[in-house]
Amino acid sequence: MCGLAGSTRADTAVLAAMGARMVHRGPDSDGLWTAPEGGFGLAHTRLAVIDLSPGGAQPMVSADGRYVLAYNGEIYNYRELRAELEAKGEKFTSESDTEVLLALLVRDGVRALDRLVGMFAFAFWDNAKRDLLLARDRLGIKPLVYAPLDGGHIAFASEIGALKAHPGIDLGLDAQALSEFLACLYVPAPMTIHRGIRKLPPGHILRWRDGKTEIKSWWRPRFTGGRAPTPEEAVEELLPLVRRAVIDRMVADVPVGCFLSGGIDSSVVAAVMAEEAKTRDAPPVATFTMTFDEAAYDERKAAKRVARHIGATHTELPASPDLAGILDDTITGFGEPFGNPTSLLISDLSRKAREHVTVALVGDGGDEVFAGYPRYKGGLLAQRYRRVPGWLRRGVIGPASRLIPESTRGRHGARRAREFLAGANLPDSEMYASWVEYFDAQDRQRLLGLDAPPARPIAEIYRKAPSPDPLDALQQTDLLSFLPGNLLAYGDAMSMAHSLELRLPLIDHRLVEAVGALAPGTRFRHGMKGLLKGVARRLLPRSVVERPKRGFNPPMGVWLRGDLAPMVDERLNAEAMTALGLDWQPVETLLAQHRRGTRDHALKVWALLVLDAWRRGQ
Image (cartoon, rainbow, N blue to C red; front, side, top):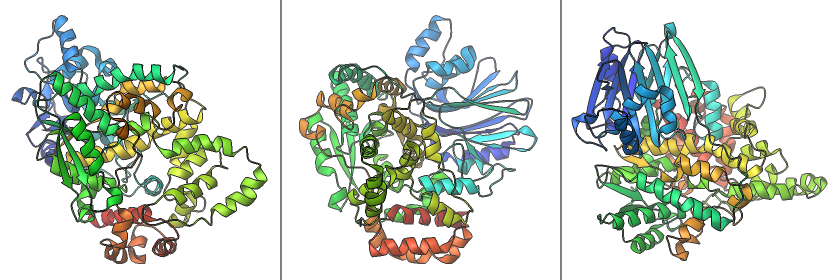
């Protein structure tokens, strides 16, 4: 796991400055390479995980000096690929997966991507053709941002902060990105908050040659399945894929552990790790759980039960008392506003776990792949609800639903009921957008002073789903939006801020493709995450499998009424909102509703605090 940066208009001092801003991503070594003819250059910082020797150092140059690779990630099937290449006469001088990737790219070019199992973002340079290939992994686990420069040149890096060290980039505020941040609490690809910086989307490549840039997709998830085995048969098919995905991600030359919440996703991962450790006669798996003083958010008992069952060496890591105080550091990690406060927990957990391990497996992605969110059930229930006569839905139930009160103490049932009833009358794409947006189109129109409601990014992704089936479209949308833009973004940024590598077996692309090929009725026959629960029953006690779902979220409502209340009063005022280009009156109304307890605006309030913190840091 590493950090990379480069430019087609290279300057050694600038490259060094870009690399210096990514030391946290790669504290073990750094490297710099510039083309002999000038013009192009790469910088790299390395976190040594596989082959700790200097043989894995980067940028890595081919034996003939023609090709250069700077790479961030892990190729889990590199040993199989290496054996195939050796059978074809390839010689290797290290045990590094980087050298295998370089050799494969030299032989096969962009076609090599289809052979890779792993997470990666890389820059591959052909010095003879003066041709650059940038690529990002299928699901978007590893980040890559780039900036067009004058004269057709480009610069690129693993992080926005590193790219800002390059001169000639437009760092002005992107108004559309601001609007979409307010909708999603993250800035979705390909945008960033800056007009002149863009994200390479997941599963995409960028080709640059002679001042011309071409971007295209090389892989997309496809939830269009028609295969309809019984759930039991499907579990038999998926269990080996889950095992393979976990075992592949245990390969490392450094200590490896697991984040364990006690929920289904991380418990399955930890259980397979424990099985494999016993098979190898290796030490017990190291598991880590974050604990909270607030009982409603604490999962230590469930996690301890799982750890005891699988024989793990378990460590409880208490949440730091002033998590909100690291807001500014969090903004630095992302390089732009990011409004999901779970990022604070991942940062705190990563910092503490890094004292024990260098790599941690996590259960992230299980909800998206195995349909684990309540909104998936809601999407299917909406189809039935629409059978209720329209006059009753629109004339009676809809207006009445707007009167439903809700809690500001983290209880979401009433809010979800109101949102369901309000959205279920809309077309599916607009319905789903209304459920997952925070500031909806009307909110943003008022906040931004627009003449008309802005676009709804999530609705547009939903409309482009290749299958009309509601469950297919719901999962497809999340795999292209919420997963990479939110969960994977904070997982990478916050773990790498502390030089910790996270690995995500439940979004192994082979597993994703297998689940996506199943008919919706098979995926959801036993409700949310039914197939993963079937897998879990082969590995864990029933009490763990049937435990109610509880997300990994901070007690934001509690914080906003307590420690964060002075920050809200100090920072969220007319002057600060005007500086962000936001109208103060809607913000004032929002704050009043939240304080009275008539609406749970905790995440909206946090998002505005994040925006103000980002503005102050510019």
